[in-house]
Image (cartoon, rainbow, N blue to C red; front, side, top):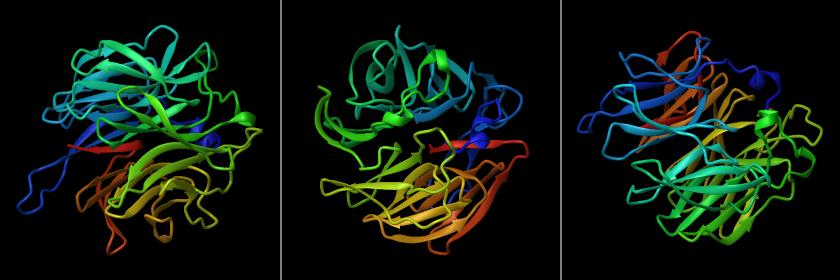
Length: 349
């Protein structure tokens, strides 16, 4: 974690649907952005009535071909909802199975019929992947994530091979977001055969304090993993690498320069370029797919990233959502909302 600045995050959460300026010859698109304010948890679309939520959410998963998305509660989470983002209507909300809690992310099967979620087996402190009917949110099955604290999931081969970032951090409902195993963390990226869930490969870094959280993949197949570092004694982490790369069967650290802090809020890929937000370092960071550092763009407290073809959007905790021009290394502000802290994720529909 990033110390008190993160732990004192504002109490509310919302999601705003932001129509984007259309490019010539391209369909209009909408940016979905989670946020926090001081009024309590909510979900809203442009000009829509706020939909109040029980707690802060995290991962947003748009449903292709519809105006709906899956919103997952932040870890340790106890709800998952299907929402019409255009109208702001909650269609259906579920709680996790007994003895489970959500870890913030979900992914759809290629045919859109099955939903997979990252979860915790509370009694054993072991990560699980929950299996649900995507339409009804009925829980169908589960299988191990082969690690502790699974966070984001990513299809390497759609429907056949799934990557899971096991953050390595144990949390339990009775202790809230307190991290219970900092001295014995075991973060790893695992590759699972699907739909069986059988473990194919497991990759870990030598330094077990580098919690592996969010995933993105470049056009040439490299998998980038955003790092949110911890210290064994719970003290704030001042400076660590922020990106690991899984390529050619090896997990290595991308090039690192001092001053970026220890928390990558999000990671995305545009072509063969990785983009990560160094929330503590006030910078958007760029690497090639082999981990060579390409440059940075200054932005206060950057958070979420969304990539839509050649267009890249970045949010921050100061109420700004901007479009990033990679060629010019410049930002163009699209919206600023005073009193809003945009969250770690953006999505494009």
